[in-house]
Length: 305
Image 1 (spheres, rainbow, N blue to C red):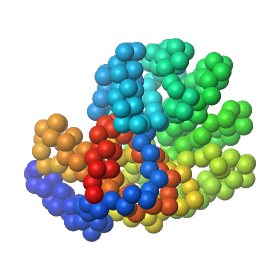
Image 2: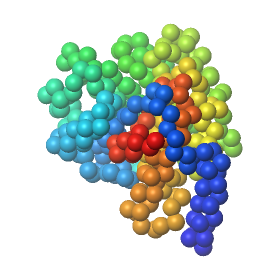
Image 3: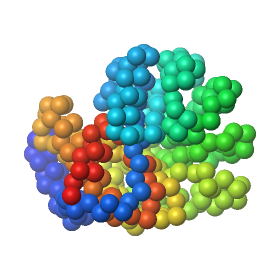
Image 4: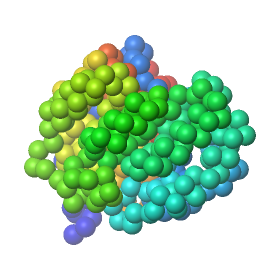
């Protein structure tokens, strides 16, 4: 029964993706896409938990991304998968310890951008305070997956200079971020959701520092995620900056009819690369950051001619 469901779901989804043009292989090079390398400093992230928990392994992964000309690095110390329990701020900072040591040692070049994937404001405050206290001039990003528009964020943006990722997530409070799959809606209306946010940030003179993220996989069913992928040009504004991340998402792995984890990952990464080609063709007027666990996925999309 499980296999039959997967086969039907895959056929339906493949039809959807073909309709969206996601299997085309003509890349228009007039695009403004940049790679953001994801490095999870966690013991329990589904795809790479436990791989990057000490100084040497983190440094090695940073250098791997550098080989592919990556300038953006996104570090997360808490898995946002809904089956994981939330951790304390103290534990999150302890996990970030090796990264902070690399920062103190001057690991990062001035033109490299450091992004911190956390919904805890005090965790991000610790990170940016360290960077600024050291006199480093690197650009910094607060990649906040909570979707919360609260006074603490606005105050922090006035206190420090950094770019802020505002995500689509329907939890009522940032403390409940890991419960995001308990907060769904029948229809995902990103246009109105982000328009309300634009007005709030604009009213405070902060809009130019905001990056918008549809947050695939958060507060969305698998079908809703695929519908957003299909109709991406209908909700992405050309004047905004965007962060898009479908790397190793479960709704892509779920399209594979294989029960083997390695084969599921291979399938999802190949599909991901094809989707990137389509996005590069469709979003030529948009400034887009692509979150990736594996830089070869981005490279393979660029090599498609």
